[in-house]
Length: 348
Image 1 (spheres, rainbow, N blue to C red):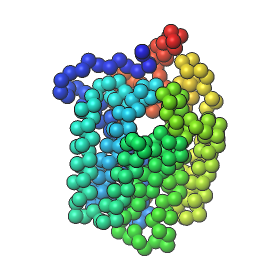
Image 2: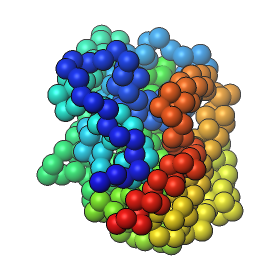
Image 3: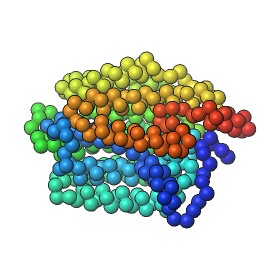
Image 4: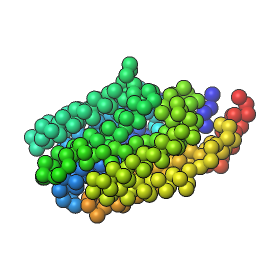
């Protein structure tokens, strides 16, 4: 049965060099951007320099390796839903086989171990990395699979990106312990911000997740309640940021509140009629715009997130064109793809 995704390519023995971009995209490198941004925000809050720190690089590489392994496992488990939500091209289309995915995951975990074992990585940073690994395992591994448990899915995202990545960056800064607020207290507005974006992306994926029986927070709450919770989390981001003197999340929360209140799409129609496609695309645009906004607000304090977002964004656009212009996560389906989905829906 065709779900509107591109047909799986014929399987070959070994790894074809022409598919190497699919191997990289399976690691979800666009999700490195918020991890790098929160890591550098923590380092900046701790007194770190505007320029990237070579001393902090091993801890950051270890974190990104852990997150990539988690996203790889998550993409493999969710490939059916990702076909409906038009993402995860390499895994969802069948371009990558299970054995290849297992090898890639093992290499990533080995890289995380080697990087985290570097002598310049502090004991506190290693504890944060262990916490990231534990959260990731709980998120994707049965029988826990927090990603399929309403509330816990959102908590894992907020804790993994908003707290652990921030604390790891703060631990890598030169004056982490000299501020009036503890690093954990300073992480609170960032955790609220990550939860806000997490809910927006779940709203974008709502129809696909519901179709494959995945009970996310948004699917459980329903669209209207989920939008209200998103607005509340955006307001909490701003209040917590301004109260703690963190102007970046404080201002970002106000902008997020306005973006969701003013530009939230009307609820989509029945699957296959195109309205749900437009709703998903608009939620994705809001999520991407808010992430870009955060990087721009942070650029006066840390350069690396802006550089990472620029490089990864250009690379993602190039890969998108190479794969036929699916446009995830910014655009919806092309007119031709939407027509194919409608025809298949009528057949069903």
